[in-house]
Length: 135
Image (cartoon, rainbow, N blue to C red; front, side, top):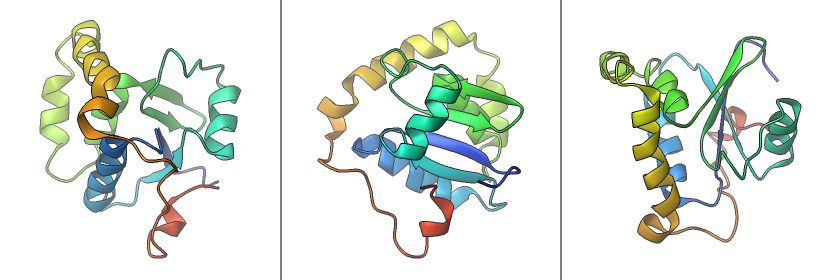
C-alpha cells in the first residue's frame, strides 16, 4: 500500500456506494485516494487493525495511514475536501455538528439497499481503474 494515499473503504455490494466511489474517482484530480470494499480481504484487515465494528459503521470509512480514520459523515466530508469543486461545500457542511449530520447519514445508510438496490458481488474495477483499488 502507498503510504501517501488515503484509503476509502466502502460497501462493495451497495449500488449507492459504488456510484459514490465512481463520483469520487472522476473528481480526484490529484490522485489522493485508493479504494477497497469493506467485504474484501484488504478491507477486513484495515477495519480489524483499527478495531472497528462494521455492524455499527456499515458504510464509508476513510483511512489516512499513520494519521487517523474517519467514519460516516466525517469521512464523506473529508473526502469532499480533496475533490475539485467540493472543497468549499465540505468545509461549510463541517460547521454542522457531526451528531446532526450523522442522523441524516444513518437514515440514508439504513435505507440505501431499499432505495438504490444492491449487487450480489462487489464491483470489479475496469482495467483502467484497477491500480486505484487495493487487493
